[in-house]
Image (tube, rainbow, N blue to C red; front, side):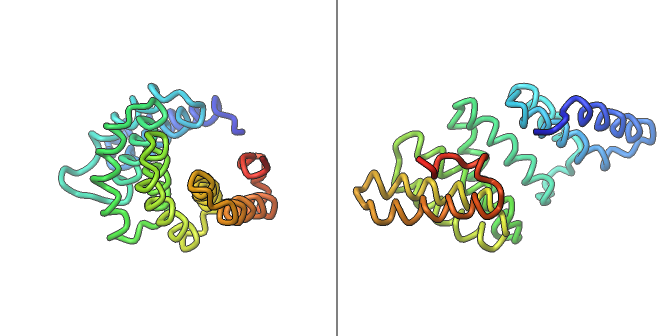
Length: 192
């Protein structure tokens, strides 16, 4: 993984420069990235704190890519904390904007999180719809990690529906992509 302590240190240094310059618009990415570093350490409370802090720097009513990324990051933290209603509300509110504005990379991620959210709650058909969208968008965005995620869950859904041929096909494709990209250690599920 990364050197999170160093990342946080440098992000705080960068943020202090923006504070001293009074350039709050530059703080959006820095404060949001502090949240991402905490997210990557599974410290979701601290990540949420910084995603919320970034909110103050967005222009009210302006839905930009940075804003949608921030909302998606916040929703994903809520998902991992099993705060499904809060996660779902944010994702459903901003996922259409991501797709409409061709923010395909973040839309792919949002579709995968919606799929997982519904899958975890046993709403399999709805989760399948979002995983199919994530599969298609990940091919366009080039996000192999999201492609692997979508394929693994599509395989699980096929297995639940006793479509073992479909399950094997999806899981095998996820495994192959993981091996080809060197992401096999991140995507261990397809190997089982």
